[in-house]
Length: 295
Image (cartoon, rainbow, N blue to C red; front, top):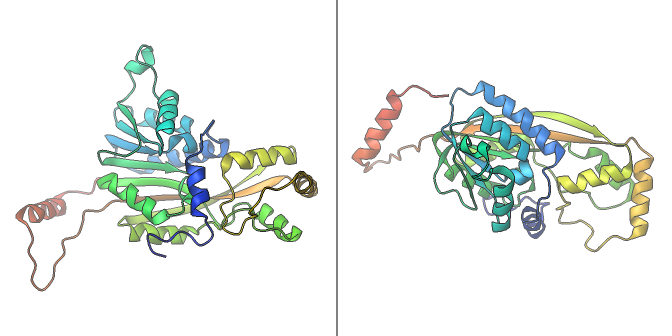
């Protein structure tokens, strides 16, 4: 799959609509995954002085607070893809100047495009909804300094297996696009220029008190981006049939959560039979060779 080719079951137009929709509240599951992911930062020695939070309105507003507490002196760039998202993120994440808590708040800029590379990039539960994941990884790579590191999470193939089984039994199109395996994500990270990717996975099962509550939770987590999804609007009769079918089985949903971590290495010097290497590049390469690893 090339960098410009979307995953085979994701509708690119639907994915853009999802990414640009107004986010009223960060989903509970996203906040919980972010909490678990930030605990993994205990194993990383590097203490970044700058970091990027990629789409925190979707990934977790509460999680942003946890990260700000962990790195209280680090400057932060908050990225949202639209100007409306920038306004909402500014209101949700940055205390007004007249409030005392703003005096201790680290420097935070809410932007639609990262201006300066940072030492850490944090992206929670965004990647699996992207129609061009390699392009997204390339943006992450560009937003990081050399020796900076990426932390991300996304959903894996066992996600919504109960809904997949139910839809097949009813003869309906798939309820969601296909989710990518963590080993494939690792290969894509390497292809995007990252080094030493570390991937792990866990399954989280949520239970619900009613079919209506289950569907409400799903609407907050995402949309069906499958290219073969039902093309028109479903009717009330279909909705009643779905509720009856859900009521006839355990009200639970499985989510396979993938966690990823990788570094941005220094670019390698290209050496051919006859190569011209600048003195500055040679000095930088020698300096990196003498330096001790920072993480």
